[in-house]
Image (cartoon, rainbow, N blue to C red; front, side):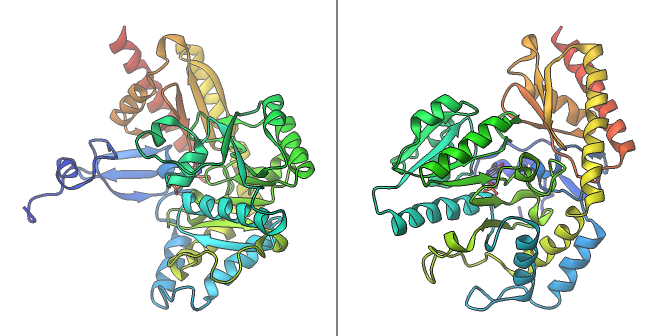
Length: 406
Ligand SMILES: *Cc1c(COP(=O)(O)O)cnc(C)c1O
């Protein structure tokens, strides 16, 4: 068995069935293209779920990784390391933050943020101030705490008992939020742009009001920028585009450009509540991840790259509108920068996965965000020609799906 070829069929024999991967297995990537085991080429509008902000095998990231790999991989947090300190320093220079905590995934960064918010309230106001407000729909990760905060029943059913002290309020609903917040609220967590839940932007009024109410009730405001951060919106972090600053910001996905790393950013005063020994992770801030993220940050914080994201947004939107004029499949085209949602029109609702499958057949990787939305989250430096080529494949995939359904 160990000598038999590695195929998609092997997945069902050896992997926990919590994923249902596509039939092909990619073996190589370069820029915004991938090749599978049979040498077939795919254009990548999925970016590994909004992770590969600089495409695949970017030479500067490969160089940073290999250089660090020859020096030092891991020392644990019993010792500091140069790449982590350098990355933290630059994140502080580039954002509101004064202190950084590194972890390995988005869920862990959110776990740290939520624990910190509880602890900060405990230190300053006492044990009664412990309620967390989050919004529906939303997604904050898959640990027990973060699925409970996310609130999607599909992700919590059967996993109880769930941690208590969490209230859910409809996203962008100012009146419902004002009704829910109280002196007992220690934190409010939100995605400035809902990623998994349909690519829906917070309205600027909503974010401003949430900020104002958090100030009035001494609750910490946490922005989950795991997906919308790291240049995705054409701003280094989405909060910068809104001009509303959180107390804690979490990010992951694009941070390492494909290497697993996440970060929680906050102020010195809030960070003080996580004293020595109060929280930790073995791998968080490891030299390899921080070296790669440092190289990625150099590139994605470049104003020219960020301006390119706005430009590429327009290229996508123009092409998607053209496709929609022909087929009328989209009810709405939305999103910011290179996080784009195409909401399906009435007869095609609930069918996003059919379009994803048809796109794969045409040599194009896309994402969905729920059953009604096709989501695109390509590399931030995808060349304009590849956008056009990929859109041509999407157009064929749509034509194909419509013709087989008719
Ligand atoms: C992906 C995602 C997470 C979870 O990140 P993991 O690395 O999968 O743990 C949390 N929040 C948002 C907004 C995400 O998009």
